[in-house]
Amino acid sequence: MSHTIAAVSTGNQISAIGIIRLTGDDCIAVAAKVFTLYNGKPLSKAPSRKLCLGELHDKDGRVIDQCMAVCSHAPHSYTGEDTVEFHCHGSPAVLAAGLEALYIAGAKPAKRGEFTKRAFLNGKLELTQAEAVIDLIEAETADAAANAAGQVGGVLQKKLSPIYDELTNLCSHFHAVLDYPDEDIEDFGLASYEKSLRAAAKSLYSLLQTYGQGRILRSGIAAAIVGKPNVGKSSLLNALAGYDRCIVTDIPGTTRDTVEETVMLGNHRLRLIDTAGIRDTADTVEAIGVERSKKAVEDADLVLFVCDGSKPLTDEDEAIIDLCCEHQNAVALINKSDLGSAVAPSDLPFMNVIHICAKTSEGLDQLADVLDVLFETQTPCDGSILTNTRQFDACRRAYEAMLRSLQGLKLGLTPDAVLTDVEEAMEAMGEVTGATVREDITARIFERFCVGK
Ligand code: GDP
Image (cartoon, rainbow, N blue to C red; front, side, top):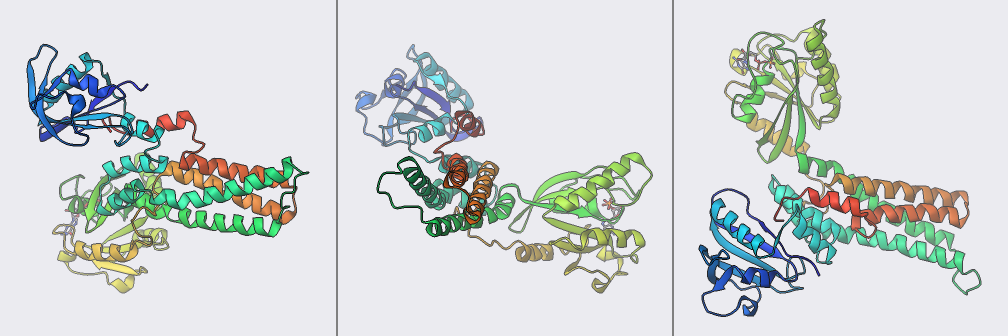
């Protein structure tokens, strides 16, 4: 018997409609204590998944709201249990009063993600689907939402299941032969084991390769803005952000730390990092900033090198160019185009060079076009992209164990030694699919959710 939980699912702001949600074996009986249908019938007789008009009231009969109730009977509901939703007027005060009345009627406050956790525990969602629900709620771009929606629909699970099944087959066959040597079981076919393990490892590797794209989908493109002091890095960040995020002065070295800001440029979400001017410095505070800038370039998905186009390049510029031009995705921005051009694109060893004016935002649309080329999505955003760090880590461990078992087969290790690695791979894959996931991990997964989901 699962106890009834209740929560507001629509957040705590004024809106046209606000939803209170209940789930649990006796939730319809709990809801009936505070809701009376206008058609005079008991709530337990309300048709499943149909909105019915009535009155939400407290235990003393004081009316809280005139609203709609919808009952979904187990197992045909999100959680797999009986559920009730009240579609109220979206005033936080109304919703709080409705919730309070439900608590008095016997419901308990829902914990974070408890509705989705119950859906998972009741077999309504696979773990990858449940995890994608939070990604869908938090998606900030259309591509991220499309990928998460695909995963809620089971696309990722469909990719993982055959790999998990293959490992299960191998394990069971190994066990059968090892544990029942007298039975007439087809003996080890080393070549066929190797073939199926290799195929499974290859599929998993293709999935792991999508994670770079997935990371960008989840967190945006990490873009480091680098250049010597006073070339207009902070002005560029402000122009991209659309407001003055950074202090802009003409005193070199005013940006002493890295400043982060997430902005949209065209279809791209950029996590901009304005680094302190990269230059050799005796000033300790600034020297720490310089180190961070170098690290930012190393960690960045995109490097935006900025120079002052109104003055010829200096040795200081050249040193920074050396630091960034080898980055896979580096773009040179010749700034201050309004002040004339002392720097030509041919002076810069970059494949992508754009004249910009951070003061007027001129040239930024061209930057958006370049990003379209550099970050063109390789894998369709239909759920096929691995975005979740936990899933990536488990898949990587599974992949490594599969490689070890392949190596073991090649070296002619004993079947039980090979089996250990196959089992380890299976265990790691099970953490992703939910087949072997530990309770503490499950708890942590659902803690990421908001209350009411
Ligand atoms: P940072 O030290 O590289 O971050 O440079 P800032 O953004 O602080 O800019 C340094 C100076 O250059 C400020 O006085 C800005 O107003 C000026 N500046 C930045 N971009 C432009 C531009 O496109 N045109 C002109 N004329 N001045 C600019």
